[in-house]
Length: 133
Image (cartoon, rainbow, N blue to C red; front, side, top):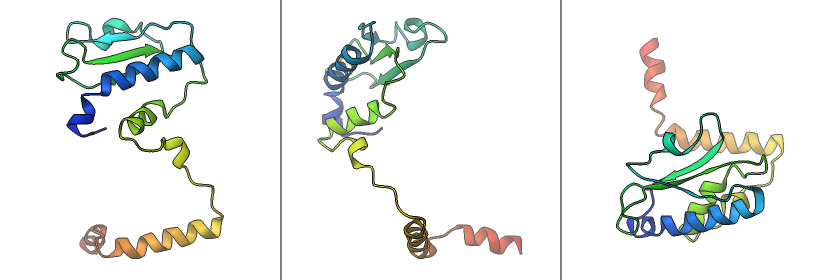
């Protein structure tokens, strides 16, 4: 996920904090695995284990580590954990709080019709349809 460079510098701190907090709640293996060019992901996670992994590359605030990994031990691990952590870095509401209430079938049809009207001006697939004729 692209983030502003200034925010990227804080990624190690944000993810370290979020991953430690998550393990206290869901896991027994609290070890946060630091990744580097000498210690890549396949070297730190046993084959077949589920894991969460984040990589920010080489940045000034983390000269030795290029990312973190952690073994996932619980089915309660939120699938939106990573994007929620990035949302926190960007001072946005977590994605799980932005989800809309489900709409009725009729409301969905209206949304689709509205989108198709807006899309019509830039719909490059029309060229494909005319080329087939």
